[in-house]
Length: 191
Ligand code: AR6
Image (cartoon, rainbow, N blue to C red; front, side, top):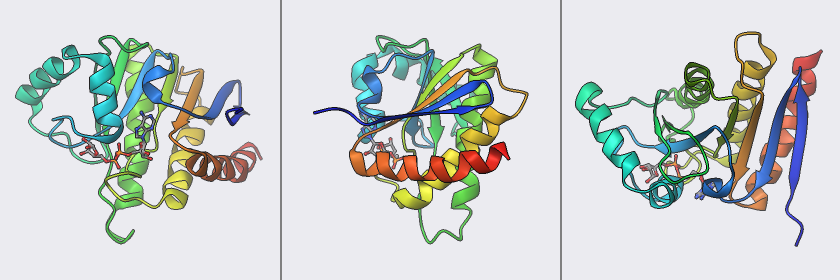
């Protein structure tokens, strides 16, 4: 079966979308959908810790000792252990309630933090999952618009040195939602 992929140019940068397991896709930095306690869990977080090994949790333990919790909308970075990457950026998405409790702002902010931390680390390529759309219950159609809007507007600006962001979606439904959001949002940004 052929796997769906989409690549869109944003200025001289690439915004890509694919279906797959994010732990298998090489990049300088891999985004994770973490929780405020930075304590690991299921979903993509579980997959990242399993594939990366215990070094990631050890480093998160040191970060926890320093900062306590990481609030929704923010992110922290660790090395990537055995993953095909240098860094994992653990972004904490919002738990979805009714869409009027600050969720879009928090979701947008955690994608922006992923780009900002990539720049601090010198990462030029970044993979991202659909943060908050699993256990945290953010509807995929709404989340895809926020995610693509946040990343595309960072890529179209002059501050970031990130060259390629790839959303790695777990299934075709998520891929279709993200692709639709991108085809809607990116041309509007260019005009
Ligand atoms: N590669 C790419 N996407 C994946 C993968 C994978 N290997 N595995 C799952 N997804 P979730 P959240 C998709 O629940 O909603 C954890 O316990 C999945 O289909 O991982 O932000 C944390 O510790 C979904 O679309 O993250 C937190 O407690 C998306 O990744 C909590 O879950 C996000 O689903 C965070 O919940």
